[in-house]
Image 1 (tube, rainbow, N blue to C red):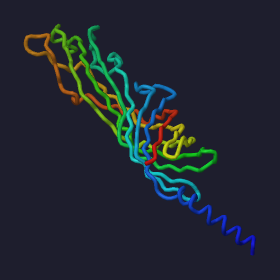
Image 2: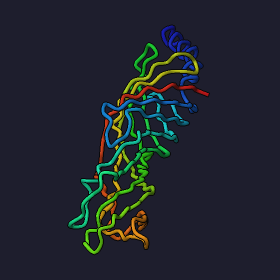
Image 3: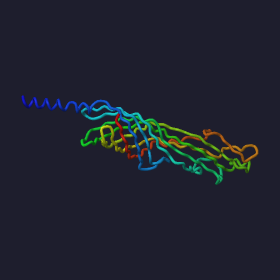
Image 4: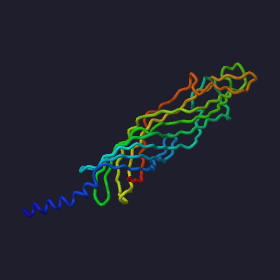
Amino acid sequence: MRTYSLAMLAVTLGAPAFAQDTGFDVQFKGRFGYGIEAKDNLTHRLIGMGIEVGYTASVGRFGAELGFQYKPGDRYGYDWRSAPSAPGTEFNVNSGDVRRNQLKGATVRFSYEYDLGNDWTLRGGVQMFGAEFREEVMGAVRYNDPTGETTQTVTDVYSGVHTESDIAISPYVGFGRKLGPNSGLEFNIIAHSYKPMEYVHTSGYGSIWSGGGGTNNPGFNNDRDYIDSKGNSMVPHIEIAYVFRF
C-alpha cells in the first residue's frame, strides 16, 4: 500500500511538468542553407522562413509549416554559338546573350522530432513546393543573311522571362538544440530538388528592316524557339535555422 501511495504521489507531482511539454505550440523559423554545389547557374546560398504549428505527444512532436524560400542566381553569359541556327548562318562576334536564374516560392513542410534528452532532438521530415524556377533572358545576336539575298547584317533581339514550377519533394534529416524556454537551433541536411529549364532561341530566321542594318524583334516565343526542360535536379544543402516559440 505504501509503495502504491508513493507511486501515485510521484505521478501527481510529475503531471504538471508533463502537461507543459505536450499539446500545441507555434514556432517561427528563419533559415539559411548552403548547397554543396552551385548548379544550373544558381548560387550556393538559400534563405527561407516559415510559421510552424506543432503538437507534442508522448511519442514525439509532429509539425506542419507554411513558409517561403529564395535561392538567387548571378548574371551569366549564355553560349549563343551552341544554340540552333538556320543553315548557312555566320555569326558576328558582337553578339551576346545575358541571363539570370533564380528559385523561389511558398513551401510546405511536415516534420517529426524525437527527444534525445539534454536539450537535443532528432528530427526529420519532407518539404514540398517552393521551386518556381525563373529565367530572365536578354540577347542580341548578329549574323549575315543566311538566304544570301543581301549582304546586310541581321540584328536579332530577344528578351523575356520564363518560369516553371514543380512539387519538388525534398526530404531532410537533422538535429535540434534547445537554447532556452522559447528559442533553439536546427541543423538539417536537405536533398533540395527542383526542375530547371532553359530558353533556346533559334537564330538565322530574322528579317532586315527597310533601310538595312535594323533590328529584328520576332518576340520571345517565335515558332522556332522553345523551352528546354532539363528534368529533375537535386542538390544537397546544409541548413541551419533559428527557432522562436511563441
